[in-house]
Length: 278
Image (tube, rainbow, N blue to C red; front, side, top):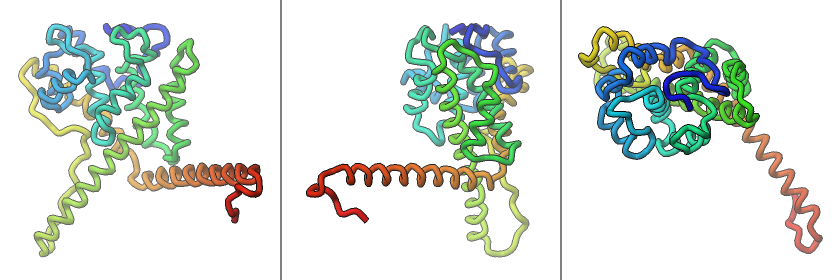
């Protein structure tokens, strides 16, 4: 993997200039971000990022500077952590790019994968079909320019992105539920009619005060961490019902097929060992 931001064979250029572009500009200007700058960009605590590094979920910074490969991984973990266990996110990244530290097994830059996620969420929110098949259609469109000699690479990326999109949607729905529940709790404590309290904006990360180094760049770059949550807000909340219905229908079809298989197996057994079939 080329860690300096250059596109290598099998790694397509980013499809959306909003996801990681500003961070790339900051990296070019600074040669790498300090921990305090990464905290400002992501909204995470420094101790959280250091813990991820300690556990091996994020590679160690180079000379205390966080480069593209580090920040992209941090952004992906941050987008998924409320719905997926941290250990499972690390395994998901291994599924996509392997476990090698030198990037020899990598099939895509993680900054590109993050851009794909942002772009897919945005496009999914702008369509009327939010079923699993609809999401997969969007993903196929987002990664249409991706190419790799290994045919399995595109399949892995498509599976990973599908999982990531549903995880982000679940995170957004949970936050909306928490916000609505908060309103109900306020009404319970205050039975007298009062003006409605507006729902808070659904951000994947909490707001933080920008650090001083360098403020003129960071004030602009902080907007990057809102990309995923902005895309999520374009989803119609009713689309979640379509996702659930689609998932339940798939589960019923699988269950029906399994029952048919069990019945065929029973029919093929000798009469004296067969179960009572309906």
